[in-house]
Image 1 (cartoon, one colour):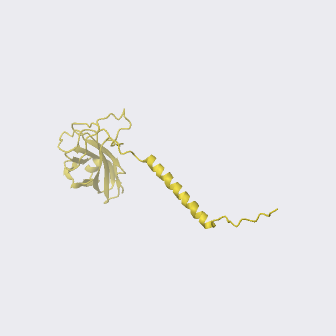
Image 2 (cartoon, rainbow, N blue to C red; image 1 turned 90 degrees about the vertical axis):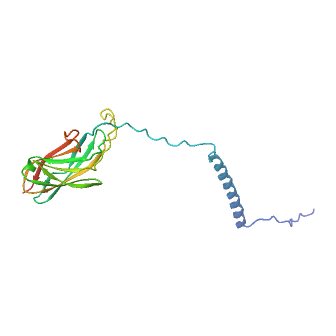
Image 3 (cartoon, helix red, strand yellow; image 1 turned 45 degrees about the horizontal axis):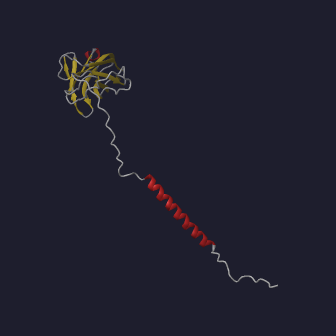
Length: 208
C-alpha cells in the first residue's frame, strides 16, 4: 500500500494586513454605490417648479381725520429744581396723522407755578420749546407722523394688530414744592376745534 505523500502545493494565505485592505476596498465600493443610489432617489427633477410664497393680504385702513389716544408712563413726581420727564404713548385709531401735533400743558399745577414746561420731543423729530399762552403752555411738533389704523373691529377680532403708536416726551422743571392736577393734551396740528385730540391728567407732586 502506497503511502500518500503530502501535496507540495501550498494554499496562498494573504497576510492579515492584506485582508484588511481588501475588505476596506470592498466596503468603500459598497458605500459609494449606496450613496449614488440615494442621490438619484433624492434628486429633484428639473421639471419641478417651486411656487413662490404668496404675500400676506393687505388689510384696509381707516380714512378721514386722525383720532388720537394718549397714555402716560411712570410717576409725575420730582424734587424742587429737578427736571421731570413725562413719557407719553401716543396712538391713532383714525385716519393718517400727517400734520404733526400740538402738545398743551395745563391745570392747577401749572397755574400755581409748581412746574415750568420746557421742551417737547419725539422719536426722530426735532424738539420744540413751550410757549405760555394764557393759563396753558403749548409746543408744536410738526414732524410727528402716524399711519392710519387698520379698519377692523377689535372687539370681534381679538388678534388684530394694535393701533399705530409713537412715544413723546414732555420735559418740565419742578419749580417749587406742592401738589396739583396737571393735564397734557395732544392735538392734531391744524385742528383749532381740537377734534381727534386726547388728554391725560394726573396729580403732580413736587416734594418739599
